[in-house]
Amino acid sequence: MQYLHSAVHSIEMLLNTFSTSPNHACLRGQLASSWSLCYLTDTLLVTQKRLYSTSFKQRGSSTCKASNKSSFRWAKDATSPMMVPGRILPDDKKPMLSDVSHCHIPILDMDEPIDRVIDKVAKACEEYGFFQIINHKVPQELCQNMLTAVTDLFHLPPEDKALLFSDDQAKDVRICHHYRKDQASQEKIALWSEVFKHSWHPIDDFTHTLPRNPPQYRKVIALYAKNIGGLMTLLLSLMSQGLGLEPNCLNDKIRGNPTYRVQANYYPPCPNPELTLGLGVHTDRDALTVILTTPEVQGLQVLKDEKWIAVDPVPGALIVNLGDQLQVLSNGQYKSVLHRAITNKTQNRVSLAMFYGPGKDTLIGPIEHLVNEKHPPRYRSYRFSEFLDEFRRQEGNRRRVKEAFELHMNG
Ligand code: OGA
Ligand code: NI
Image 1: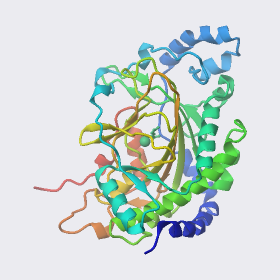
Image 2 (image 1 turned 45 degrees about the vertical axis):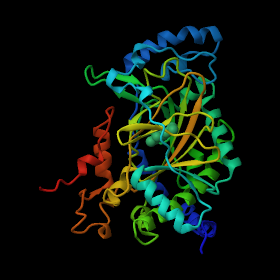
Image 3 (image 1 turned 90 degrees about the horizontal axis):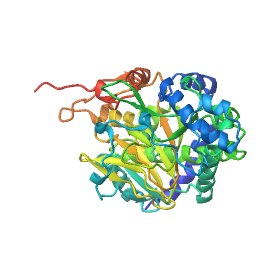
Image 4 (image 1 turned 135 degrees about the horizontal axis):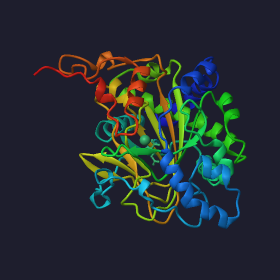
């Protein structure tokens, strides 16, 4: 019987492809126009600037840059930010934490025989769209170093972070905030997090665009990205086989000039987690996501059968979830499900989501082998750029992007 770790060795070859792609410049151009949107309103900035200026002064730190550009000053703060009106979600968007179910998302051991792993991956992709993996071969020390580097980044002095803060979606490397729009007033409600975004490919090209501080960030993310690139290739191969397709099928559908995005999330303690969210309810727009998160703190929740399930962090595990493109490619057999991040009263939580998706010009639609009389196509084909346009159009709301590409059968 063939075992999974032998497959892992063959990934080294694929890793070379990751680091030698000829499309670097082109990729950067594409990424520049494909960022998700997430900003505070001017009103909120002004209100918060006033509220926070006192604490800036008390601490005797330099105030102007940080308070002008990013009103948040959460990193390493002894006290949490206040629950100001511009941060309280309208009732229909509050998390209703008492309703969370106690069911669990699947935990897969990658050291099990490959046939078993394929079956379990397929089942998890069909039923949950989310699973955790253990024995994934990404070194634990590297994962720990990555989490430390992300935490250190968010703990930089506010004036350093202010330099990275930007509302400009065309900027490849930036810190920003997410928000939700209140449908009634159309006001933007800031969510309880800070987010650091950049691209993670090509490995040798992207790191020089990243901040020099914290000093280890560039080196650690480069190594981590190589590992995750290999892991994603393996996961897509298992997912392809789980659909009865050739092992390379999903990789081939995405591979032509793909998109690689990182989102590091920082969730500070929150005085009242019932009133806000760290990350709003969303599905991931790309194909595949691998998440590394603070092991001790719960925060991620996944929707299953209309109920929210809390993801219990498993030490050493990575969380895997499917993005919208895999749902479309699999003709709806695999699910890209709604998820959110809640806050907690006492602890900081960080997470690092690595996204992998098609390039702007890549044609996405249900894979031919999965379409037949019994399974008619559920989505029309589109270029990924069309999907991104629709994604941007729905900014600030709970997005229903893939639904815009659904085909409705007669009868
Ligand atoms: C994301 C995401 C979950 C988390 O970044 O898209 O879903 O736990 N993150 O932070
Ligand atoms: Ni997500």
